Image 1 (cartoon, rainbow, N blue to C red):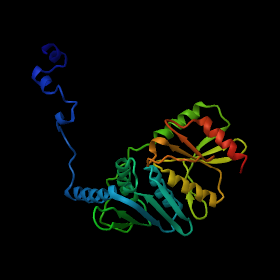
Image 2: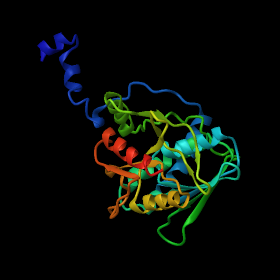
Image 3: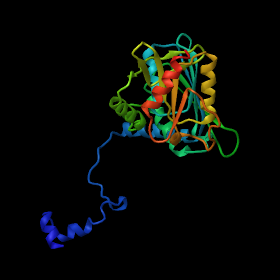
Length: 286
């Protein structure tokens, strides 16, 4: 022990007392950032509101007519956290976004509930919205928690950029760069108006001849929600899109008993060659 102590320029007692320092129960608080009482209260109030969303059955967000930047911000946060959603409306009249709540899912509800909770501070950064969340109760009828962008009770000033990153998207971009293909993978920034609904894809697959196919890498999904989304696109007669759906993020025990030329189901990574094959088939159907 003395040899080790000498090597690390300390004493044997210090080494013995820190042998299990990698265990959380043995870790010591060395320092911490101070916080003003008012800021601490803001965090506490926000956390109370976030806790409600663990038992959320469904959330509806009404977005009043506003600028494209605000629409992209709200839709972007919904997609950023991989929330199961449907969108109704248009840019001129505003949108109604319906989010599936954690309490309505059979599978991965805890992980999904965390995503619902951390979405709230992001929503508070946006403008021109009203939110109504149905909260499940063990006894009696469900309750509704309502907020709007005009509220002043909750403060999102301590919202930090979340650590949630879609690793599947990052892998796809790297693998795409390695592939010698005739299609280019471009980041998308537009909101595609489909009449009664809207579409905010992650990418545009652009061919050299000018053809475009939109690609959306889904977050959490269920066979029911995905089938409904496909029906919305069919009603809008919109075919130039691909949904990439991870089996890891399937939010129910139910498996899809159907296939679609617009859906790529994958397990570990999105294969560029499969996307290109689907894009080629869709290009000749449009």
